[in-house]
Length: 273
Image 1: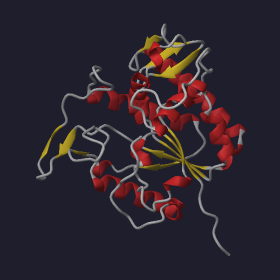
Image 2: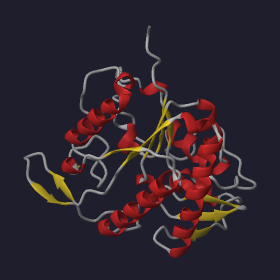
Image 3: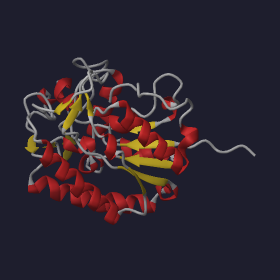
């Protein structure tokens, strides 16, 4: 009897998406929801927003799709309709500030900033909610409870849930093998960030999520959490060395996802998220 191939959904960021190489890795079968966060994912659509035809600014198609999904709030319906056998969560994209606009809450991602939509009437008067503020943490806490209830009340209750525990790497490995600190980190252009502050935020988010969600597995490659100075998407605290991705893939295979990877373990080469 043939086994049923897993249907994998990712609610997270490129740290999980990059586990699937672009050539023969089965990435085309994934449902990938990114550049959003729980408060935005569960919020109301932005009143008066209409996506442009074509691609605004310098966005690629998948970047524009993610921005539009965040503004129009279509991702949750897609997730439920996808009927995944496995859902992998990571919270790296929960670093962005939120915006209150047009009766909804949206994610102030780098892609939204590049899209030009912030200059359109629907978003022109948007009010920023800083990610590290008490108000933002309360919105996130409320959204976790709502999301946990949604999971239990929909076909998502039958999915295997996996938390990809993530932190920002404080150090990077250079091409010559030297380990040096990661410096001058920015959330988006011109918005600096302190790595310890956002790692503490991730710890709080993961603890709150695990406390309210149904039981879930956890993958963690802490021993390999180094930034790669030569990463194909550029230096970032969450663009890791190849060993990181290999270890996470091994742990996912041990959780029954070996068939989700159609090629041998390899260095990541997935499209940028």
